[in-house]
Image 1 (cartoon, rainbow, N blue to C red):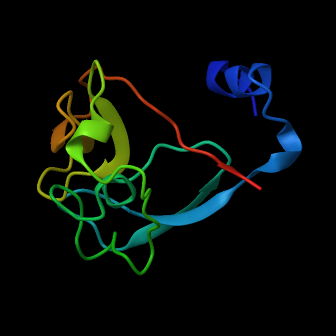
Image 2 (cartoon, one colour):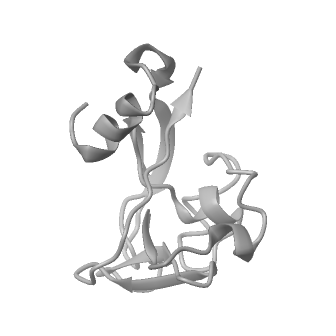
Length: 126
């Protein structure tokens, strides 16, 4: 792993040995999704299900409680508020060129993939 997020984790005292990859499923497309791809990374963009525990803009067929974890900390819009919206890994189920996001007020939203937004990667420690 390299890059500013990983470097910041190490600088803050998180050693490589305690971060472990998480295997999860993400819809393989927006309006044309035909399944879900398995993705396994040490740092990842959360899906809409992981952030909200529901599907507002993501695929309710391919991203579900059966194949997604849930970040229990984010149990209210207030806990998801950021200064700018943050991109998620989930494609928008109704538009092949859009992705889900958490908007600046903490609610589920989507936007075209070319829009500029922030990202807050997730990680797990042992």
